[in-house]
Image (tube, rainbow, N blue to C red; front, side, top):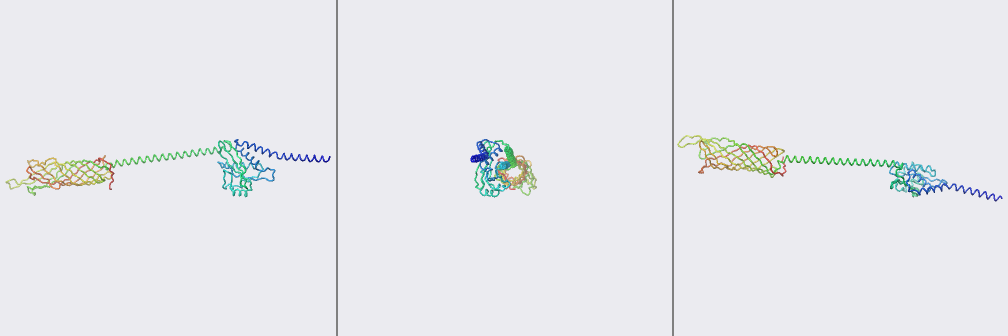
Length: 451
């Protein structure tokens, strides 16, 4: 009977121990089953907060020893990389808080790993360098390192967490979750980012518009300056157009002062009195060819009237005393000078120096008048030379100027009667003063004055 009692007591103790062990192990089994249930729904988007709790559960259940083990492991949450630093800090803090609240692990104070966080590491893969891992283990005493990333994937966000064993620097777990679009933790940062992008886009468009307007302003200013330059060029061309000609035509009208030196071979020259100075009208037209900037060749046609008056004494036949008489010669001729001209046209001024030879072509017979005698004779005049200057200014398309010159015959004018007898010989000395207008006919030459 006593043996039966001992067997029953031993059996009862054994049943109680087995029951107790079963009860102690049942929560862990339930957690792993819950973990498997969570992993079966990884493709279902959840909120960020839910995703963090789910990931902490998964890490705790699959990789962290249970509280019944002889010791607790230590972990450190280093960084969760996102597009927004403040959100990264929030996720890191939430993970740290969730692990701390479970009381199944020792969580290293984040302040103890700030120096390590500044070390270079690949945030996209979650790996750290061997040296950084060893330093982290020595300085913090942590066995596991948690990093991660949050990024956009399709229509959702994806949170991927990396669990790294520090001693071996080996990634041992990579849980991930899809996060719904519009998550209350992410949406403010996303909206702020969208606002910043919109603001940046507005600034970019405003800057582009400013650049466009500035470019347009520069273009308009350039066009204005170009138009002004063209206007100035055209104005300059208009100002100098009267100078830039190859051929000039001009007319002059004025007076000719004429004096003649006479000798009569049939009489005594000492019996002749000095002649008067005759003032007669004069009209001229000319063409000037100017192939060079300042040098031109001018041919003129001058309608000229000669009026020669003189007085003298003669001895009538059978009379011993001399009698005084007066006589005059009148003729119309065309004087044709060929001149070499040096022209200067600074600003709106015309200035010329010229010199050359002329030929006189009679247009009528020489009319001789003395007392009651009036006769006409043929005559011939020698060539002569002339020199002078012109000074004027631009007026309208051409130039108005005054011409002053001196002319003298080289030789004597011969007047003969019907028998060929030389009646009188005179040499002309003339001063011409005329007012003229000159107009350029053909342009194309660029005028470059020497002063």
